[in-house]
Length: 339
Image (cartoon, rainbow, N blue to C red; front, side):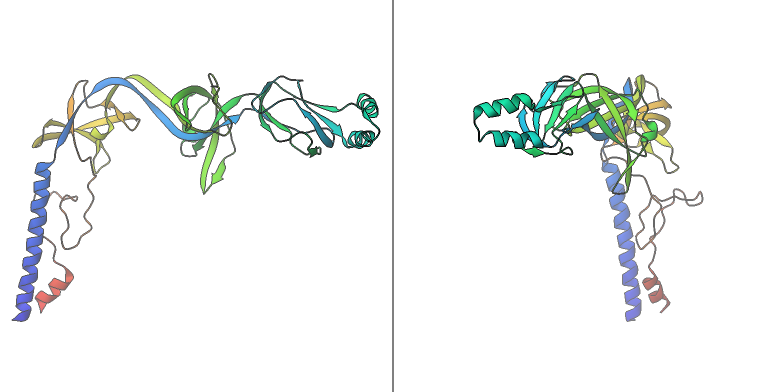
């Protein structure tokens, strides 16, 4: 008797749970709100969105030709220099020893040796800007010491994921902003794509170099940049908000047309470019058409995995399509019924 009561109680609980679930699901579908969108013509672009850094096109480190002591520095960081301009003077180790000994004999002896034994000039090899001065006057240096670093031109080095590098081509336009100046956009063009990749945390990236139409004064080497490389662009495309386009179970795309909420029909469409905000409609819709999409967004339906209360909406066969399936009974309840 007790076993029979337990079985009946289990069945009542299962049936009641299934009923409440389906009732709540139907109530939620009735309360679903829809937002309208009207197709229009406009511009859309296929963008590779990535990050990078400001870097010199050619970075030259300047080292002294002799070991010795820095006598005089003539330029500061940020200075614009010309090819052949003297940047500093260095006394060789021999000159330093001679001048130090001459100081004990007086000013005339020092002047004699300064005129007879000239300091070695450090000369700029190119036109550019001093982006690094890594030395001070009086410092002892050798032929491997870096005194200055020069840059002839600042560019953007964009780090492109290997999944996107095939879409990036020479001559494509790019829009760049810096983290330090997010409201200022600078245009440029891809002029070089490096062939050797870089592995960072098992992610392979390739550098695409972008030459700017004009380098702003506030640009500094190694600043972080946000880059949008324009892969393709259309000026008179038929557009809809991306959220208005849904994906069916078979992978096809569609929009909802009609009168919400009861009389909405699926209209298959072909989608072209999608920039994340707008989607290009290639076929299936006319300009000025009104479509609807759920305010909560679209969630693709999945095949139910089974269980006591499997939610409806899974893929149904033609035989049971449109019929409401009863709730499944667990193995434990089935064994109790046998008892």
